[in-house]
Length: 460
Image (cartoon, rainbow, N blue to C red; front, top):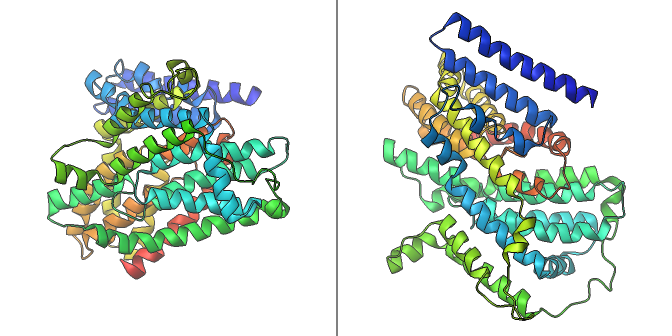
């Protein structure tokens, strides 16, 4: 408690000192320094959980406009971003799966196939998350896998010293992020980068072009992640989680079938959105489908007492804080962009244009991976890719050779809950602390930098 008090005092003191100092000296770059002060305070509070991380995510809402760092329209667009509604719809499906124990049925089916030791369960969830995330967003994948992981964790909740619960949640998030690197539609930054290059530079990337580069890298990353967790499990790796009676096949209830069928329909609409829109002429969005599916949960009757599959009272369990967390991350990124902080950082890179490709890639990939820990990967790609593309035009390096590695790296933020949506979602389970994610995530971040750079040098 004393440490948190010291950190709180130092953070607030430095924040106020910067505000007063640059206000007194009337510098032309006053908003630049205000932005640095606010981002520094938020990062410090996020790292040490001085207050709940969801409260820290509200700082831009309280301080952004008074300090002149962002206008109201930009601020509200961040806290009302379309991905927040994708979260919301997905969370409601997660509640419905949990309410009718459909997640338990699915998780036990996975275990019956792969085996019930802790190491095999980790492998099953890692692979399942990655495979799903190749075709649907990593956000939707994590939302679907989280209730299943929690159902498994409930089987070992009496094991107070077990590391398995933490590792299982992490492989769900990491598997979804890594699987999303495989295809053009697997993660939003992928399609964003492709769009930026095609619109601004006339460089087109097909689905197959992306997959032939992204899939092998994704497989390498998955193997590395599993080996690390297998090693970390130690003597627990061969422990059985379920006994034979738990693994006996159980009949699916009508409500479980209804929820899973509806969610499967939503997944199909997510997966084939472009094809369906082209064929039918009906345009729709991922977040629109998510909300539409969530609304249907309140209409479709259950087989219990003329009830519905979901009632509004059920949403008391919805992790509303995650929606605020996402909005706070988007707001911070926007503030850094609007007030020149990102431009200043990227401008410094132009001084290193004479360096060999491998050094340039190390710098770019490291900035992308560790930068997306504190800002959304979408924001990082949208700001960083145009700069790198412009830089590449003044060198002998191709756009793809520089832009694709940093886009892939933007999916490799493994340290903090705010790093990627999958991280934030598994953190919402309440079974993880920030230090749990940081301990494993920092090592994986470093390994990811090395793997992505070497892979890019050899294959891209």
